[in-house]
Image (cartoon, rainbow, N blue to C red; front, side, top):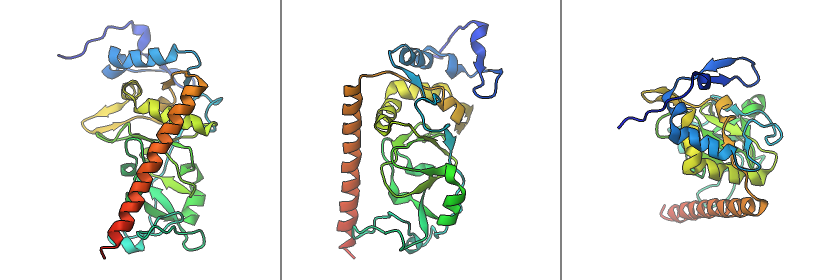
Length: 254
């Protein structure tokens, strides 16, 4: 059965942040109760905030950029970047390569980052595209494509990296809060909010940075935020350890 929602005409207007003025928003998902009420519930909690709030984020939300790769995708031996973990478990150090990690949207999974599909760009490219660079604690959100849109992960490495133009970067002032924000966005309520702002159809879907900025994060006491952050980060670390041990084991097979 199709979903039906009736709203007053005044609710089809959306304020344009940072630009002034308003626009009409007639996408049905924006007005349907299942998606609208997720926003309302989050906004009504004590201490709730929106992701565009500059009291919470370190800089305005932005997307990555189309990388200019320096590795040959058909030749795995050409891939090298600072911080890359080799098959034997050793790490490529700064000074051993000019390559910097580049993450496509496919690398942003549900709660973790798959460095197994990373590529590399030059240091010069990375320095020229500073806004597309990520650092530890950044929340990365897949922002395009059926099946990939809405995936969220926290960048948990110390080495530099750049993300492509399909990935949105949210940099919070409190890096522990990053894990809580990511956990909420991965929940059913968080996914409903993301889905509310998706534009497009027939597989060509996306959510814009300004709409990610409209997402409400419910307030939560400091103790709960710390527990969620600690457990989420620990789970990702265990997954990373598994991946490293698996690669090291498989390398023994020749």
